[in-house]
Amino acid sequence: MVLVIEMVHTTCLVPLEDQPPLDDSIRLWSGSSGSYWEGDTLVVETLNFSDLTQSFNGVGTAANKRIIERFTRTEPYTLEYEFTVEDPATFKDKVTAMIPMVKVNGQIHEYACHEENYGMVNLLRGQRMAEVRVEERP
Image (cartoon, rainbow, N blue to C red; front, top):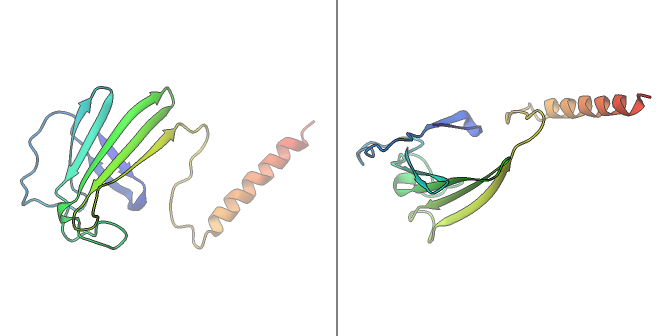
């Protein structure tokens, strides 16, 4: 499975079959992931982060960071995404959060730099004009 993280366009490869973990001496910028199933939940565990990366918002080192992600379909168009970050060099305790991901009808715009957001202003202006034209139709 490939997870594409839109921020900085990072790609994470997650093997879905049982494989031995990387040797602890091999460190990767985005870590090394493995997966397993807990019932209907896909669990992805990521270790072996490079010690050159900071753990959170410019703080800590990711050398001992462990991220556990859980993907559970709760409804036909809803995926519950839960993640836990364990990093003793940065946090006193683990940090866990859950975000429901709901299928969106319509176009999704790419996260990107929009040159001081002038591009976003024009995207929104164009959408408002399209809405006005629909309202003006008899």
